[in-house]
Length: 116
Image 1 (tube, helix red, strand yellow):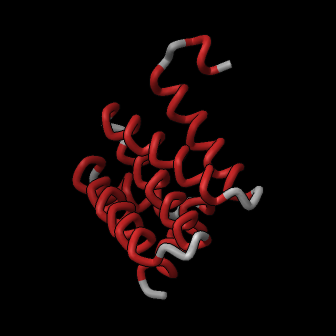
Image 2 (tube, rainbow, N blue to C red; image 1 turned 90 degrees about the horizontal axis):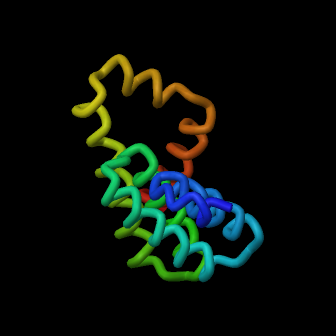
């Protein structure tokens, strides 16, 4: 359905959701491909908050595929994009974002990938 709209942001958000669902369905290779496509779209759109999550999904998929070097590279990229949000949004908004339950879960996953 998102393809019919030709809305680049909606397409990228749909790709991110598809990547996560695909990973949850134990299709890591497909999830990796879609996550990296979403990451590129978010980078072009300047959506750092979604871009870091796409990098995180790519890292998780790479971990499941046993690709440790790629996993680490993607996790480092996720961490860099996440860190750039504080400069962009300010400390108060950034801390509010980090306090969200879904983001807390993602942060724990990222920490495990960065420090296996």
